[in-house]
Image (cartoon, rainbow, N blue to C red):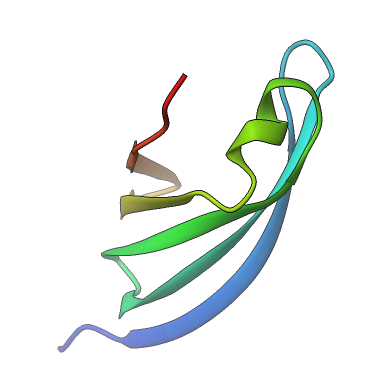
Length: 77
């Protein structure tokens, strides 16, 4: 049985431990079980504000009811 490919674009809202919020738009076109994509920060408060417009790459793998991910961003301090 072959892998199922899909494409998606999703906005994600997150909050860090200090209550600062951020929004990123994720893009992915790959196999459902594992794949790669990228996201771009589109809004942020506090330290996330300087990431607005930055693009990050990620890889994800699903195993049973869990997932493992690795993100790589080039962000200057």
